Length: 148
Image (tube, rainbow, N blue to C red; front, side):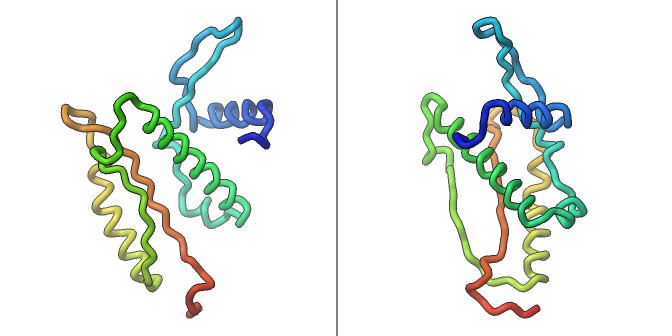
């Protein structure tokens, strides 16, 4: 983020750590200073329905930008692994435009939750690798008539 000062980044990281969204994963001394590596506490990085409903359009814009920056960082971290093989790992990034009524959107979200939620409770085990799944859903207005 070249347009953001280091002081601003440090302040925001501090706020995220103080708020319990980030936790220190490791520390090391570098030229007399302590360098910290942070880890996202995924269980805390959830926006409930009430908070989302009270967010402004600009709030949504900022949260989405952070989510996308985080996703890009996670993907780059994966690509930087030794011996990475996106094809063998079934890496995917696709977009599908679907026509859905509000009721069908709710039904689809319920079906996706029914498929994903049980797998989120899986524990590490031999033969298992952790995967990042990032569903994103929003209407692409301006391409269809609105009924409301």
